[in-house]
Length: 307
Ligand code: NDP
Image 1 (cartoon, protein in one colour):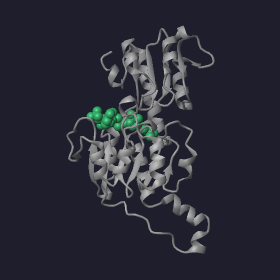
Image 2 (cartoon, protein in one colour):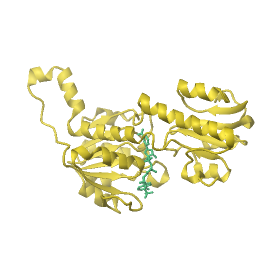
Image 3 (cartoon, rainbow, N blue to C red):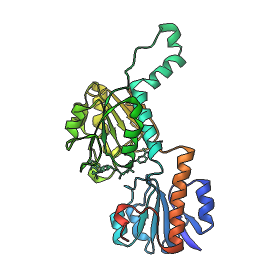
Image 4 (cartoon, rainbow, N blue to C red):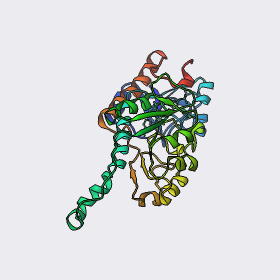
C-alpha cells in the first residue's frame, strides 16, 4: 500500500477516507524512502530537513489555504506537487474577520464581562461603544478571502479601500502604499498570505498611521504584524484596538497582549467550524486520492500549477 506521512492532526472523516487508499504513517514511525505522499496543515507544514529526507516524495496536500510553512518553490523544483484548500473557507474566515471587527467596535468582550461580574448591577450602564456602521475599511490583501470580507461587510455600509502589490478590477479605492491607506481608514483588516514578502508588513509606522481611533484586525498570519510594535502601540494608545486571530509564535501569546483591555483574541479559529473544516478536509483528501489515481490534482498551489 502507498505510504502517506501524516503531519499534525486530521479529522476522523479524513482518516477514514485516507485509510482506504493509503497506509498512514506517523512522524514517530515512518521509513523516509517509502513515503510518497504527505498530509499536513498550514501551521506545521513540512520542515525543510524532513522534506530533504523524503527522497521519493511526489505530493504534499495541505489542509488549509495558507501554505507558507511549506517551501513550495523547492517542492516544485523537485517535481513534488503541493495542493491546498482555496475558496471552501472564504466565507468562514470572512465571518471571523467581521466578528473581530464588530467585537472591537461594540466592546463585546468588555461588556460580556461587565454583565458577568455584576458591575452592571453595582455601577450602572456600561460606557458607550462605537458604531461599526459607515466606517472606512482598508483591506490588506484583496484575494479570495479579502473579497469575501468586503462582500460580508456590505450591510455595515463601509467605504472600502485596499492595498495589494498590483491593483485589481474592483470598485474600491486602491492604495499602492500601505501607510497612506492606514492614514485614510478607520479599520485595517489583514488577509495576505504569510511568508517573507509580507513579514512585519504592518509595522509601527502603519499602526501610528492607523492611529488612536483606529482598529487593526489580523486574520492572515502572525508574521504579517510586528507583534512587539503592536503591543507597544496598544499600550501607549497610539493604536486604539486590535482583533487578532493569529500570532507570531502560536499557540504562545505574549502575556502583555493577554492583559490588554483593548484587544479581542481568538485561537487561530478563522476557518474552525465543523462545516468548513469538513469541506477543507474533503478537498485535502480529494487531492490525495486523485493524485494516487491518475497523477493529477484539483487545487495545486500557484508554484506547482505547471507540474
Ligand atoms: P489569495 O492568494 O486569494 O489572496 C492573497 C492576497 O494578498 C492577494 O490579493 C495578493 O495580491 C495579496 N498579497 C500577497 N502578497 C502581498 C504583499 N506582499 N503585499 C500586499 N498584498 C499582498 O489568498 P486567500 O485570500 O485565499 O488567503 C489569504 C491568506 O489568509 C492565506 O494565505 C492565509 O495566510 C490566511 N488565512 C488565514 C486563516 C485563519 O484561520 N486565520 C484561514 C485561511 C487563510 P497581490 O498578489 O496583487 O499582492
